[in-house]
Structure formats: structure tokens, C-alpha cells
Length: 333
Image 1 (cartoon, rainbow, N blue to C red):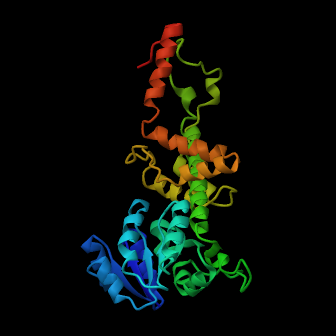
Image 2 (image 1 turned 90 degrees about the vertical axis):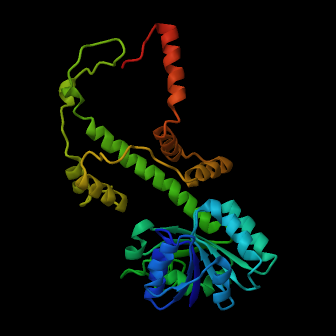
């Protein structure tokens, strides 16, 4: 199968490699020449531009977009005038699912198919495969099955050979009509925020379990520790996270990565603690609000990311101002 790939970042380039490993051909384009050169050396066909990529593909074309969500609209606007009826665009980035629905509807007027493909796997996708959450017309998704199968991790020994779980057990799933793939990926990332926050908060409690060993004079601005003797533990977090990886109910790939980070640097000194969010957590909460369902953990995890970037500084100054006003409380330095 011949596949076009636009966007050769950390995921796009590895997707090209997985496709070529099983015999698919890839025509590739990226604004960064060095990214193209790397996969060209491994067998990909270089395109000099988006127009050149479209020209080099044999109709009906299948073009996968692995670019930031903010770049998708402009790229589709550029592509749509070049595409023919029956061609397919696969949006593999973290686009908003409502945008996916609108793009599907718009491109359908030209006879161009649109498939939204939520993609998980990160920088480990080349080695482990990518988990694919797919939305679009069933016949179009079926026609692209060889591409999805090549990108996904593949079947385990107990995977069903047929039925609704057959492809899910291999790491990819047609989740429903246009927008469904990105909706499932959106919630996936919301859950990811919550899981990460739970590990981080628990490990922070362990890190501060030696607070009873600290010395200091009592003052009105500090809650006294009633039993300091209960908090005199110095835990080896590298050892604890490694321990949890073996047989515990909270073992996971995220925990594997956390244990590896502590093993390399027990104090995580190279990290500042500024945590970004790329939109999916916000969209997940927006969906929860529209649906009228609670999402306490996901909301707290998202807001903690805001706080990590200093977005709570002003409200904390407001709190300090009020405490000073009603009780003469000054901030401790």
C-alpha cells in the first residue's frame, strides 16, 4: 500500500518506519529537511512540497497528517484543492473531535474522505506499536486496514480472531463515525492526566514523609505537627517505584517510566515542574460538562497543570492580602 505522510516529528517518522518494515511504501514531506533525510535513507520517497507529495501518490490517495492540531486546518485548506474524489485524508494528530466532524462534512462535498485517527504511543511507538482510535465511514476505514494493522502493536496470544474485539486486541479500533476516534482519544488523554497526577501526588506524600525530622520554632503561621515521630521516614523513591512495578495493583507503563526516571535521577533535578497541557484535558471536561457527568479527578489534574505554570500566583496573593487584612497575618519568607 502506498501512503503519504505529512509531518515527520517524533511520532510521524516512526510511523513511516513501521509502515515500511512490513512492505508499505511511503511518500513523505516535512518542513524540516533533516527530518525527511532521516527516513529517506531508510527507504521513504522524498517530496519537495505538499503539492509534490500529492503528485507522487497514485489515486485513490491515502495521506496521513501528523502535525500539531493548530496546523491541521491550514494544511487541509492547502490540500483540498489538489485532491480528487475518492482520496482520503487521515488526521492522526490531537485535533478536537468537533473540528473532525466539520472537516469530514466539508471534505465530503468534494468527494474526499476524512478519517480521524487518535494516536497513542509516543516516542515508544516504533518499538511497541501505536494504539489507534479511528473515526469515519466504515468502508473507508476497512480499505485502510493494512495501514492501521501495520502501525498497531499486533495481536497477543489470546486475541480473538474475529468479532468486535478482534482489531481492538491488536491495538486499533473503528470507534464510530466521524469524530469518534478523536473523541475517544480526547478522553484517553483526560484519563492520562488523572493517572499521572495520582502517581505524582502519592510520590510527593512519600517524599515529605520525613517532615517530622525537621526542626523549627512554633509560630502562628504554621500548623503544628502533633506527632512528629510519626513522620520520620526517608523513603528511596527509586526503590519504591521499582517495587510497585512487580505484582502491585498500580503497576502500569506510566509507572515503568516513572521508575526509570527516579533510577536515573532520584531528585528529578533536571525538571522544573512546569507541566503543559495541549488541549485534550480541557476538551474532556467540556464534554463532561455538556453531558452533565462529574469528572472530579480529571478536573483536579488539569487545574494542577495550570498551577504548575504559575497561573495560581495571583489568586494566592489575593489570599495573602485577605489574611493580612483580617488577622494581620504576614507571609513567611
